[in-house]
Structures are given as structure tokens and as C-alpha cells.
Length: 461
Image (tube, rainbow, N blue to C red; front, side, top):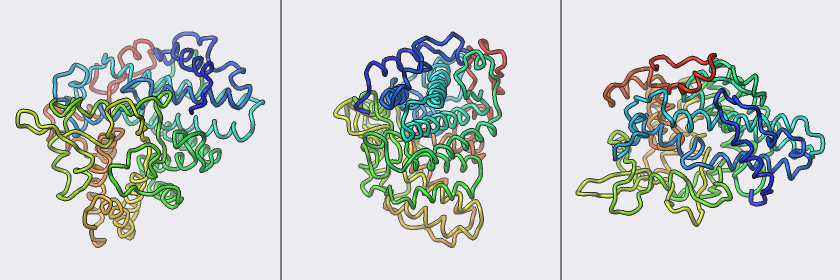
């Protein structure tokens, strides 16, 4: 990523930024868009076009793929609270998000759909290209399919049914209705299976900032888990765990550093010039001020005595005699020196995916599921669980480990509550005014006005 062609990157960032997602693309495409064959005239220019997509993922702070999901979904769930009144944060914490929210429109809709548009345009350009080497064409195609699948995974997790856009045809895209989530999951599976056949285990470029084959496998394991395809989820997670390419980092303070051995995929900042949005937003400016967000009492009390994740992944400031705990997985608030990238996928999650997939399949797999849990618990300094626990006890233990291992990471807690059907029971007790429909975010009002084929989620105006 350090050898990006500045001119082509400029075309990618400025040209594509002209394409807003009002109607998904309600203006004619700029002549600067990547559809031009010149962008795919050789390997270097095609690589530069793809680099532009990664640059866009962390162009904002926070942005959809750069901290926003961790922050806003953490508020929607029961992980964090904003310590001062905020017109931006209050609606998410109170689960009272208006459909005209600028955050919903800009961060959680236009941003990801622009990413999808860019990925689609590049995939079309790569498919037409005749001057690229076969190896580079496969690599870049696989990468863009991973990016598209990741983006759709979060869109469906946030909204449920959303428009499935797989082309860069702005006229066609302008009136696409919402697509059933099951069909979008089929697209994700197809993209990730294809990506596995196109990518190698080697990372392309510097570090782990570009998807490799294991990235596609790891993401597919998660997609299968959410789709309740337990056998395939176990198979995919097993491939990652047994690949020999990754290992759990013993030092909890080193899990989230750049190129950690636990990292499967990480996203660098534009120009690799700054640390993560989570670090800059979660960590207060000094020990004498309240953090912007504090961990909820519910999360704080979820850690067992002796859990080293609480000691290493939480920090606190004491203001006027009150302790404010905040997420401290990423350690650097300052922009530089750069020591941390945005970690998208890591090995610990794969153990938890395999554990759940095993436990869900059969009581006969409880021992194997507990063994996976104990790998995670051992790293955290906790005693092992007995492999004689029941299936229900095992699933409860998995939910507990996911809660304390994956907190403040990409909305994992928010999505877990919803996919396991426990969101009403949990948040109904913890939050005043909780309504079942709050589990899905509202479709942006401006999008519905622009595209009459769109419908609103139940409960929203």
C-alpha cells in the first residue's frame, strides 16, 4: 500500500466521491470513474484502483469501516454510554433513532453503498481487462469480493433487508427495492467462496492490510454462523484455526498492534498515517477528563474475577471520586507514531465461532466446544470449564465469552443479541422505552424519498 500511484488514487477518491448514494447513484457517473479502461491497462494501475477503495474505508474518523460500527452499535447495545449529552450519540443509546438522522444517512447508508459501488465498478473493470496478469486479476477480484461481502454483512445486520446492488449501472441502481436478507446472504456466500478460489494464503503488499484466502474463509465462517449453518461454520473456522498462519497472542496488550500474529485482516489508514478511530475516540485526552464514552455497569460486571481482559482491555479515569471505565483495546490516542491498524478479523473470534457451531450441532460435540472456549479463557487467565456441562450451559458460556472477548469490536454484542433472539429480554430490562422494532435501524428518510421502491422498517416514520 505504500507504493500507491498518487494520480490514480486521486481519481479513485475524488472521482468516486462525486457519486453519492441518493438513490444509490442518482446522478450520472463522472467521466473520471474507474470504468475507464485505462485504469485496468496494467497491473500497477489496477492495484492503485483497488488501493483507492482501502483508502476510502478509513477516510473518515469515525466512518462505517473505521470505528463507527463499534461506537454506535456499542451504544445501541449495552456496552458503552456517552458521558455528555449529544445529539449524535443520544438517539443510539436511547434506541430512538429518527429516520432523518444524518449519521444513519451519511455513515451507515451512503458510506457503505459507495464502497459497494466502487467494488462493483472495479469487478466489472477487472472482468473486462485483457492486459492484466492472470495472478493479479485473480488477486484483485478476490479482494473486492471480500470487501463487498463484508459491507453487505454489516448492512443486513443493521437494517435487515437492503437493496442488493451488484453492478455500477446507476440507472438500474436508482430504483432497486429492498432484497430479502436470505438472498443477500447467498450473495455473500457466493462472493466468499469465489474469493477463496482466487486468493492465496500470502498477503498482497505490506503487512496484513489486504485480504488473503484465510480472510475469505474467516468471514465466511461468520456468515455461516449468522445464517445458522452450523456444520459449514465449523468447517470454515476449522480451516483458519488449523492453517498454522495465526496464533493467539499471549500478551493481551499486544493483540491489537499492527501485524499482530492474531490478526487475519486489518485496514490501514490512508497513507498509513494515523492510528485507529477507536483509539482516538475511546481514550480521553488526559487522566483528568471524562472519557467521551464509559463502559456500562452491565459490561463491567460481566467480567469474572481475575479476567485479565478487564485489566488490560479496560482503563479508567477517576473524576470527582467517580471512576469512568472505557475500552482500551487500542492503546494509542495520538495519530502517530502508527502502531495500530483497524482490525477487522482476528483468530479469537474463529475459536468462538467453532465453539458455537459445535455446541449447536450436537450434545456429542460439547467437549470439543468447551475445549475451544478454554483456549480463550486460558489466554484471559481464567480457569477451564468442565466438559461435562450441558448443551444449554455451553451455549450460555459461549455467549459470555463472546461478550467479554469481543466487546467494543465492530458491533459484535449488538448483533449477537439480535441473532440469538435475546435482544428483547436483555435490553427490555436494561433500557427504558425499549421496543422490539429498535433492533433494526431506520432506513434513511431521504433514501425513501429518492427511491419510491424502498420501504421503511416497522416502527419508524
